[in-house]
Length: 186
Image 1 (cartoon, rainbow, N blue to C red):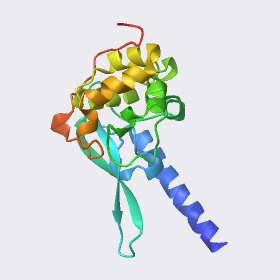
Image 2 (image 1 turned 90 degrees about the vertical axis):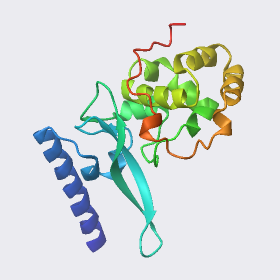
Image 3 (image 1 turned 180 degrees about the vertical axis):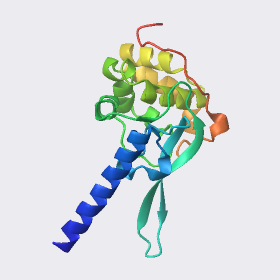
Image 4 (image 1 turned 180 degrees about the horizontal axis):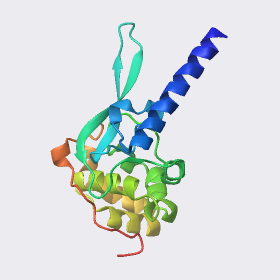
């Protein structure tokens, strides 16, 4: 019972913290609960990212941190559950990585109209990650719709697989401000 009371207190604390930030109109990544950190944008327009580290007991602890990646035209934003589901992203993602672009199922969800047309935050992030790999996301999505297998072959041949895609991309490698993109344009 004490454990349940402790969890209730923690949940209540995070809910109050989130409410206070929204009421004051300010989102600070370090104050966000870890379950909404990934795909959020601070009031300063910087992406929040989930990081992990081992504590003294060797257990992983997760913290929300402010990255140096600035998002053009979006600030004070916590991604919706609808976009998380539509785009196939995971709120428990640690860091920022282009690895998922190599997964055909993920690319199909990212390029789906429900994600691509309605979730500009997620599309902007992956537009920039793809650009960092030398891939133009609108072209990748167009090819993915017409020939998913060929799209993956072209992505792999672009050099994306030759880089250490698991390493977070430095902010200076990110192109800020993806253009207004539509999956129907070719």
